[in-house]
Length: 381
Image (tube, rainbow, N blue to C red; front, side, top):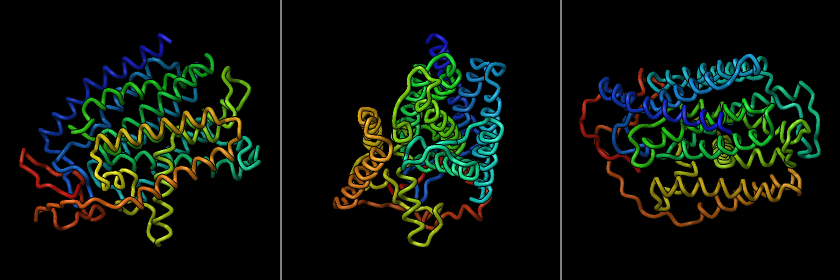
């Protein structure tokens, strides 16, 4: 317990010291994420918060996790390093969707083939137990890629991705702590990110002074992907001191808001004949904002909903993963349907002529624009 507290505190202290330095550098170099018609912020804000998160997380993990006793963690940290640099490049210079996807595949390959993390069983979900390697490895790749992008896409409102990340990593960390000393390294990995996110949220809570950017959200997604796959295997097994039935459904419930939102939005886009990575205003945070909630309220609603599903899933675990997961899907889509049915409130949109022309990231050379304290006109909320 003391070791985990030290890990969390160390990560928090490093990050809370690093983020203001990142903000100063962004201000001096004029590296800002400028609002346009698709974005929700109304002024230029630095989007390099992932740098502070990564420094706190990475250093505390290296200091508190023994790579000699846990050799797989050298590959986890290598994949995290690759994901971070992939994200930081996309934060400053625009990467095409194909290049980002290839980078994510490379990070997933390190985790799967070198780190030994893969889904080898469905643990009774849909009546399926052991999986053949021809299914196991592709399913693990898909799982990791979806979770990585889920946290990347949910990062659209001040404090939302960070708050959900604190919830998920704290839950995983608590479980691995209770599962016994054999999983202490996974608990340290979880709480190292929890501490970094807590410090980052000091600067990202509405009104945000900095965004985590892709360097933070992609890292957050990768670590959660590792944790949930390990959680499902350990919780349903006999080698842990705290076994939990219906581990597949409970693992899904821990990541419910980002996962469900991504699967729903991807499905809608594909059904309309569009790329699943194309931009729109159909995410859960957009729906809530269009119903009159502000950034803080959207964050609180999503956080409470995710926590409620975790509690309900845990206390309903005896019904089995198939029925439990189906019930969560049904309940979630009823809630989404209610949001769709709920009449939109009128929105006031004020656009400066400087932002009337939609920014084309695929052709531009940079995602951030050099500015020196100029005012920025209000964009679409």
